[in-house]
Length: 355
Image (tube, rainbow, N blue to C red; front, side):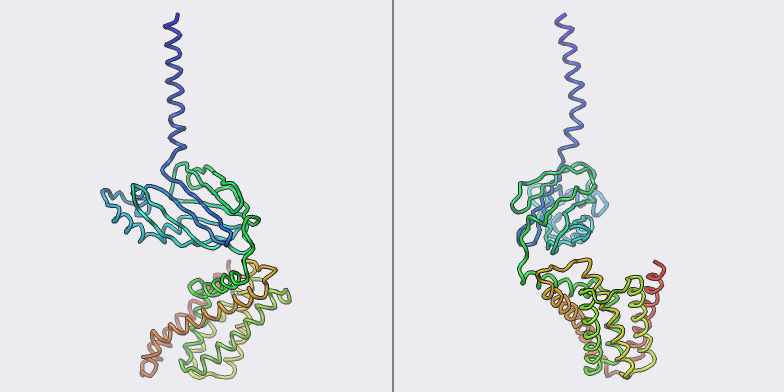
């Protein structure tokens, strides 16, 4: 009787063991993620995982037997690819982090850092390079740490951060919106880059370039300010195709003349008004802090101007400074470059109208 009962207990224990083992193995993985949302409107996210497994997923191969130094060097080269595999959002705004890596003691720590947007929406996290369950720990100023278990590449539940992060100072607002304005041109604004290059290619002499850039700046500053104050509004479905057509127009005109004509300045001014509406659309998505509305608006505009000047400076130093006096400069540089810009403008216009 006792022996039969012991046998039943043993079988039940084995059954429970086999049931619980997969659950435990499923829950305890080699990857951990710790997110810290700071008072200074920055974040730091540490991803701790097995370096060899991470390398195999990024390179899609099964290389083995690498030293810590070799693993770190190869992973560091794939830092941008890793950044593309994580999705850090504050509301609908996706944040692109800076990535650093350190390999040691059988683990790699990938540190992701960046700025929390002004008037940040709820924080969410998604990691595409994992297939098992892992823990995400979130720490925000003045709050108890929160741990969330995530299954593979699922997105985390939204975590409200606005009330836990201090209001940024005026200097922080100016710095952040200057950077947003600059990066909206370089490297993110390829359409605006091509428009600026189209203006520049007409003639590389300083006076015509400055005349066009100043006219363009005045124009887009007018509509950017008016749009942000709600004085003018135009649908992006109209603005975006017209911006693309403005790129094509300026490039095509470069093929027909090499002199700055009065109508060119008027056309650049009109197109500047359009581009200002495009910049306003970007700012609406980002949101402007009510308490620092004017400094944020001005610093964004200054950032845009610095981005444009950077494009012109790079173009001048790369080609024009040594090639502008050559007989082949116009047929070999201006004409083919303008043709390529015109084609891109037409293609974008068709895509934006169709979309």
